[in-house]
Length: 145
Image (tube, rainbow, N blue to C red; front, side, top):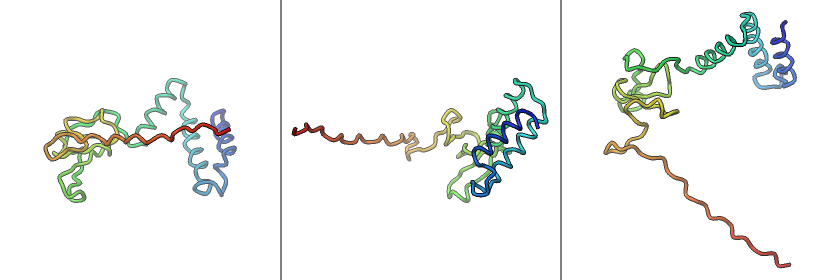
């Protein structure tokens, strides 16, 4: 084993992630070690390691590496489930469209919105999130001493 695999195994053991009484019966430690071993086998330098890790994280979290498009092949019709016209992007599952992908909104991050917003009032205006009401602060009392 190399420095990385030794380090990973030691840290996972300290955290108890191989223990049968840990989450998922110790399988998390084993799963992480499989990934670490493969990554270590690839022999990345510092620069390539950072790039590979960044790309890996994005794709395993089902994030898109390039902007989503209005290509109909990217959109899955979910209208039957929602009882209104709605499409979900296959590449970014948090992006939805009401018009088959011509415009869309993202429920996780507004910067991905493209001509639509998450909630609309019947007149087409965007609903703003409710502002929390201030709570009353307890009055300070003076000690009777």
